[in-house]
Length: 113
Length: 116
Image (cartoon, rainbow over all chains, first blue to last red; front, side, top):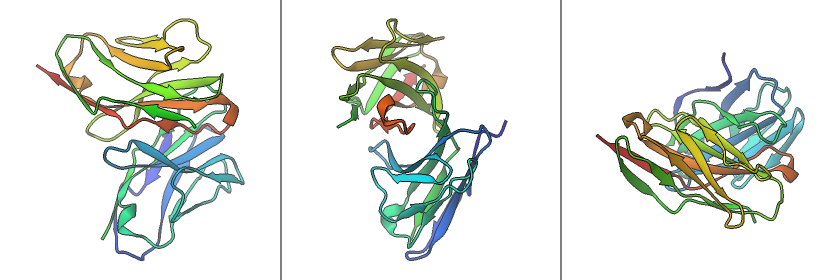
């Protein structure tokens, strides 16, 4: 079972470059989210989506864009990478049922030089 | 505003002993869910246990149980008979049902080290 698939697993960028982190899920989940994890700060929500065509900002959205053209895919775009965006990024998905956990991808470790 | 607080940055426990990881939360919603995740050094997020705000009994899953005290807004994770493989970071998270978004708010995490 694939679950939530994130690519790439590692990436190094130069300041000012742009890139897209890919996320795909095969569980037909309505909800998808992007988090970043920084030491001592837990996971913070960047953007989320409640269905195809519907996205909204989370706690730390600046510098990131998302789109959700299909149920399966939820890419995260860094518009102009900054060193402050060095982090581990997680994509997650869940069904609409309140008692169901979010399923996480394996994460993308991103370094901005 | 919704918030999760984990006040123990690091914990040690002797193998085979029980350990409690603290989690307090703040929300104005009456309906919410509380989740615990484990993150080993390999980095993946592993779901452990869930407690609903209207659940009358504390949740249990194998060696994991939740000490849920709704009036105190706490949802502490209890790991019984600790094993070396329990060494990891543990996160408490909350989902407000009324938001209908599926998004989770996470605490800062607690690093647990199990000593042989």
